[in-house]
Image (cartoon, rainbow, N blue to C red; front, top):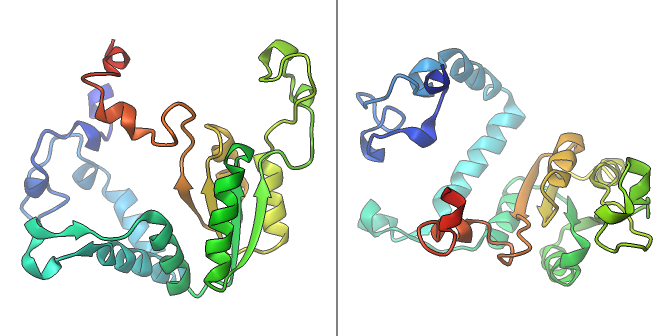
Length: 225
């Protein structure tokens, strides 16, 4: 039963020969492109909504603009823009005026730079740090030995409050930077506006989670055991 579930990450077929890439492409029996037709049809209905269609259209345009040398053929294309630039450009494409920006207090210095970049592009920026509200961790059942600062007061991260602040301010597009695993999930759940992630938190790897995956056969081989 497990192998019957959709599993694109397990697909053994070369990308250029897959059903999701070409009309007569190949697919394993668990391929959602052939197994989950109802879900695909429902997605097409959603794309008939004007606001969703425009969002998807501009996102696809932004994707294409992230590469140079396209006139030389697919094998010669190269990336030309960092994510911060693409985020700014996409927000302009969508004619957003008011951006929401939530971040971890551990990235407060980076947040100052990012907020200035958005503001310099003419956006109104509503920002909210993870510790806003100064709510004690004890209020959600955290013991003293489970804190980072054992024996001291410690504010809990409050992603729901971050979302509610941005909702109250009627932000149009929310950018997430460095929220903890789980805290980011709660923010995304409660945000009214569409969101994008500028950076995912990884305390050990300088907020580059894929570094552990890139070195899975060397430095992080223990993850496979």
